[in-house]
Image (cartoon, rainbow, N blue to C red; front, side, top):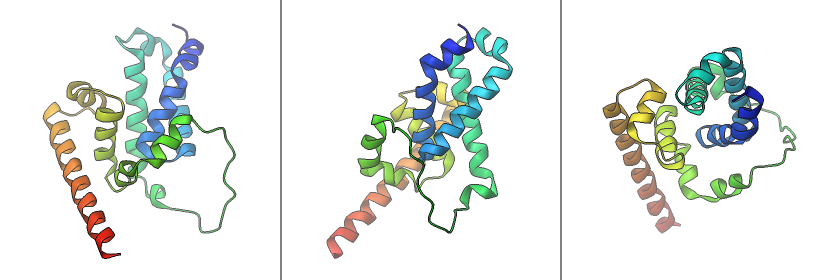
Length: 164
């Protein structure tokens, strides 16, 4: 498979993965573009891998986790900025309307990535562990902690609803 064919076939999948882990469409496009740029630099190696998409997905996930560790990740502009006009992915509306999506934003980057890869991308623990460079048991424990956090968040929202 040539690089152009790969981008045509899997480019939107990468943007969608970037959006589900980052929650921001522009950041998702940046993540996908960065992953594709890095894959292009070593396309022979990527193409020779058992699963090229797995290889590029790992690049994207690693780039997202590196991004969350940067100080600039938490910075936000102070002035109102006109939103960038793009044609949104239809899945965006579904994800934005989902209450679970808002709760995912409260998780750490690694917890969010594990849950997104497990439940949105439907990957098994061994594949997730390979993508993140950790052990499958670490995937399970991270998922367990993340789910516990989501349960606590859900309970606190229920309490808030009863009070209002």
